[in-house]
Image (cartoon, rainbow, N blue to C red; front, side):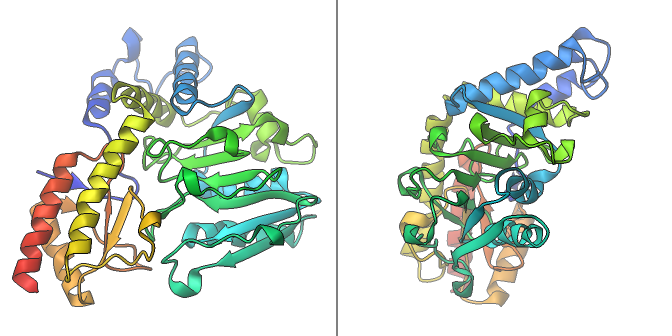
Amino acid sequence: MIYNFGAGPSVLPKEVLKKVQEELLDFEKSGMSVMEISHRSKSFQEVIDEAQNNLRDLMSIPQNYKILFLQGGASTQFSMIPMNLALGKKAYYAISGAFGKKAYDEAVKLSQNLDFEAISLGSTQSEHYNHLLKIDKSKVDEQMAAYLHITTNNTIEGTTIFPENLPEVNSVPLITDMSSNILAVDYDVSKFGLIYAGAQKNLGIAGLTIVIIREDLLNQKESLSSMMDYRILAQNGSMYNTPPTFAIYLAGLVFKWVKEQGGVKKLEAINHQKARMLYDLIDQSDFYQSPVLNEAERSICNVVFTSPSKELDALFVQKAEEKGFKSIKGHRSVGGMRASIYNAFPIEGVLELVKFMKEFEEENK
């Protein structure tokens, strides 16, 4: 049995893969693959409309928010966000992980040629991002602030800002990279000005990025390149150019699957259960360690842990691969191991990993 612990691209629901297989050569009796039909066709319009409606339902997205299906990966949003929202203002960043730093670094580069200021509220990099930054709101100039950018789940470092710990920012729009825990943790969308997420973790396959943006934040200036302008992309229903049609189709199937599982709250409860199995073993062991300092900040999507030495980490990864536990090696910047247990990851796989971890500890302690 193979269990895919990959951080992204990651595990997909078997039911979704089977549905894709069934329809791959003949989508809805069209005689064509979904990869062949026009994005301007009635058939594909129904696909994207249904996907959008199901995502709005799953996340309880208010009607004054637009849902965009875009290309370029979540990393493209590092540039699009300040270009659309920050001109003439100040853009604030709370940096608690590698991707938060990348977002800030891109904003700094852009600010050298555009009229806005990119400001770091601080970083936990010197502590290897082993905890979340405590945000000092007094450092935010609310009159000039375009937004405050955060990352709800740090995929590499294994930390999470859960809904109850979101920063209170008053009138300042809260912008978040939700790539690795969207639909896995139930957030109140109305607390955010903009949410963005790469699809290849909980939403589907690489090639699609979801942006959920409050309508009042849509750029009103005619100064941006059309492909970088949220307003134009929204006006054209995410089809200013040919969108990633197959990735949208597959995400739509994932949204249906999430609804069939009982929705986001039900999956979040299961995700907590899966993560707790691993954290309980780690906490009860003198062999394994979690690098995350605060238990309340531990991710339920990416469980990061180490053994007593780098040599044992390497042996663990080798033996795990032989057992069928794929892509469990930690990110190169962190080391150790990382079990990414997204929505589609089965609880049976966590049980098998716990069993293997116990056996490995007995053999090597």
